[in-house]
Length: 226
Image 1 (cartoon, rainbow, N blue to C red):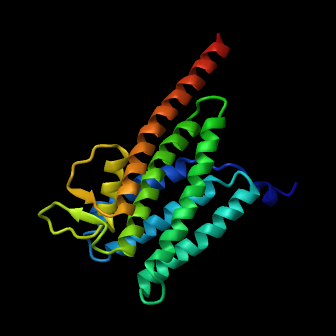
Image 2 (spheres, one colour):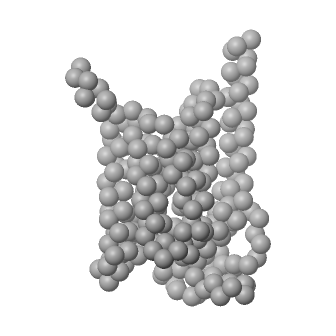
Image 3 (cartoon, helix red, strand yellow):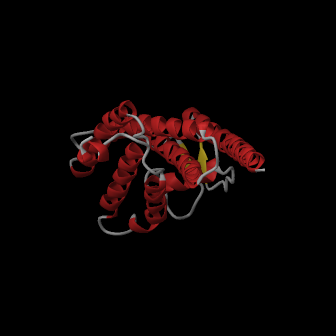
């Protein structure tokens, strides 16, 4: 086979790249948002996450094509809205990103649940899927806030925060996913409350199912070795 074609052969790329992109986005978000031009940097990091997500599920040509078709309008709409806000409404990017994130999470979970043994790849996929869940709900909260501006969330803080967009959305999503709930941000609309309830239940079930699955795989590996 031609070596070029061999290198381009569709396969599952390592989820390490996706995990690195996610961690970079989540760690950088609260700091770069305060900088001049910080929203541009966040758009770059978010685009990198979406591209890494496409590559992470490229184990089959069909999966790669579907993910790429979903990613192109999401990234394009994000940048058009960033540079020319009057041309594309933010909800276009948010809907496309939601579909892409759900598609990638589904593939990661399928890979984790079908894995025969616990490997570094499985662990990275497990962590990446958890972070992607938090990111997916972040985008969902952004969407609700865009549809009902000022009416979806109540902010019980003295810092003058009045929007769930940006890092505030990341913060609220992961606090809800981990079921901590400090109470400084309260969902008040029906859609926002439903999303928060679903995310909290998903966070609990994900951890329970994931631990059970990884323990089962580890026990099977030990039994086979003995």
